[in-house]
Length: 383
Image: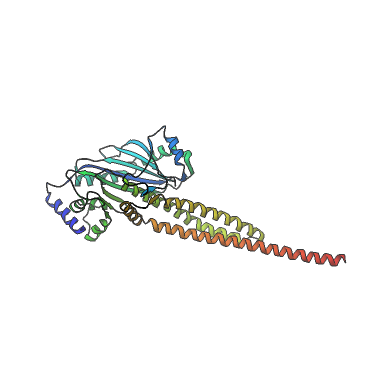
């Protein structure tokens, strides 16, 4: 299938077939996600932002709530018109705020009535402009949003980890097309790869491997950092699900990095506590164990919230796309790495508690023995 798509698209480019489909209605969306806090009070965000920006709670449109739903629906803020240097049309900016501390910025540019090659070129140009230093409004948009929601942030983050993703969304062509026809008749590879040079057949096949359709006239093709979506009904559910997967990756990266920094400090503090005088070491071990227990509880609570950000039960199509995105973004291996490090810390604080308890028992036994000896000596002395 992928070989046929490549051959057909190459023939179209070579001979310039006049019947090449045109994109009647399409959009290019650039996502950038940030970790901004430990948690965000979404109810407070709604209250604070309502007087300043159009505000709403996001919900999936094509799926029944019982089939797939947000654990806590993110708050959407409409940030109005936006421009990118070198992009000839203005776009629209949105912010989406998640309760587990992630903030997503959307820049959407509608590109209509373009040939397919022109649409691909426009998407790549927008991607380059959004990534260029000084050419994109990310910092201004972030500052604008954070200024509004700061009181709702619990433990604001200075790490400012980022994830980005690019979406090319076609709502209609100049003729009816099935998802299979789009996959076979159009060359999606230049957009999905971001490459100017022709790719090898194996690389093309790999890029087109994660292709999904539910109805005959829709299509989603996913890669690590971008996706092509054909959505004649104008649904945004697939894009929303991809954003959640990116937000989960971002937050798990944050906690993975945090635990990477914490483990060496933990080893040093354990070693230091064990070199102290016994009663002092006992207190230090107990204090350190309590700190590590609090860290594990904090990270476990937030990672569970991240992992439950989207609840999938009955919507098979969105569930398949969500699972594929989690695999592509390597969310599960990142979560497994966090779990392994949490296990090391759990084992350490358990050992510290055991050592502190043993030390207390030894001190108590020594005290009892000393008292018995003292009583015996006093008895002989009095007698």
